[in-house]
Amino acid sequence: MAASGASRELFTEGVSAVLHSWPVLQIAVDNGFGGVYGHQKADWMVDVVQQFFHDNADLQRCEVEDFISELMDQEFDTVVDDGSLPQVCDSLVQMFGQWQQGALQPLKHTIATLTQKKSQRAKVSAPPTQSDEDDEDDDGTQMMECESSGPSVSRTDPPPPPPQAEEDGWTVVRKKK
Image (cartoon, rainbow, N blue to C red):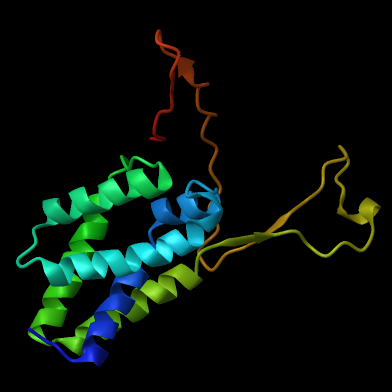
């Protein structure tokens, strides 16, 4: 097993890249699911996950899934059911395998790819306003510009049906198709 401090830090960087590019964790942090210390909890989670790998030999994806799922539930009051948790855990298990084998170049490449994807996420910003009249359409609504590095796609899907209240008072939110 690779034991140098520099390579262990590289695995920690990998865990950070995976978790910080995971939309579920980002939504939980951005929306305050973890309370006022959500950002600190996300950083702490990186340390706890990398330590979990070092403390347990031959981890399977399902074990990592259970551990991260429990952390998300306890720290962010979030149940992950969008199908992304197995992918995140696969990435972590693969990175740990690369780290154990001393394959640091592929690990660095994976980290760079994840970091690049995170920085390329679309950002929405309001345009600089010259005057209120210039930015308004004929119907009085204001226009907003979106910056995106990806191709422009326009969709004309019908709006989703409103959430339905179940008999027990819970509202069911369905996944888009």
